[in-house]
Length: 211
Image (cartoon, rainbow, N blue to C red):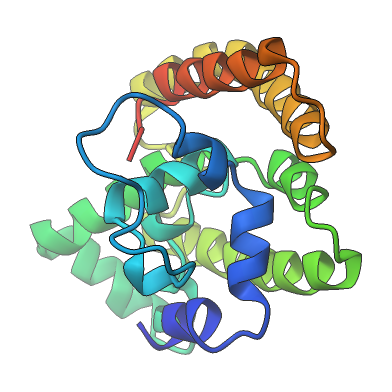
């Protein structure tokens, strides 16, 4: 919680990064919800509803709410004790397995491309680097706990199903990034807007974690 809140609420420029490096503005245009993305007109994270918050990070392939902070939380703990917890405590084991599933659908290379949508390059680099550092810590922690070489190494069937879908999802991410770039640069061609929404739908269908 401390690491998560430090990023989301205490990092200068985080809100600007989030709103530029994810398709949150475009998601608000989707006709799929009964309520607006935010509770008020405020851009603050506190006023954003939970589903568009998670959906935005899913679309940008960061999946941040599903894993961020775990690496920091267990850093310095006894690896043997963590492995024993995973073996003996079903709740902890399920938490780790759920994180593996979410992280297997993330892609930090694609996430960096979304970070390229942030107008302030220095801000983009600073916050992306913070996210990537926690990603590396969390991957290392999960692999240490599971004793696997790769994420989902102990769930081969789920890993296979996810890997089969990714070649179809990744091109949609790249199309979405380019169309968002055009729209935000002032291209008001309705085909651009419709293309963004279609790409959002396609990525959500492929990931099966819409938020």
